[in-house]
Amino acid sequence: SNNTNAITGAGSITYGGLTFTGTSSTINVTTQSPIALTARQGGTAQTSYTTGDILYSNATNSLAKLGIGSTSQILTITAGIPAWTTATYPSTAGTSGNVLTSDGTNWNS
Image 1 (tube, rainbow, N blue to C red):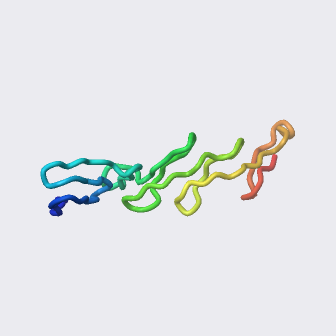
Image 2 (cartoon, rainbow, N blue to C red):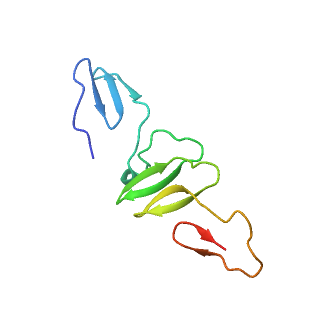
């Protein structure tokens, strides 16, 4: 949308993460750091990242980030949202010919 504000005389206007300062004949533009553009504006709405972060949609037109999991964790989905969890597997291969099954919490051979 268009900003209809104007600098008259000396002053400043802040609009959309930008600060316009100066007089009506000289305008300086500075950014307010960091600017987080929303997903609808083509951005991520995030202002920083850490190595291993994962972006995901947490609602219509909205992005969130999930920090990296710990060693040996696996990525799962809980109520439509990604989450890290620690998986449990049999510590040994079991008897030859056995089938690997799950009881909903653990794996059994």
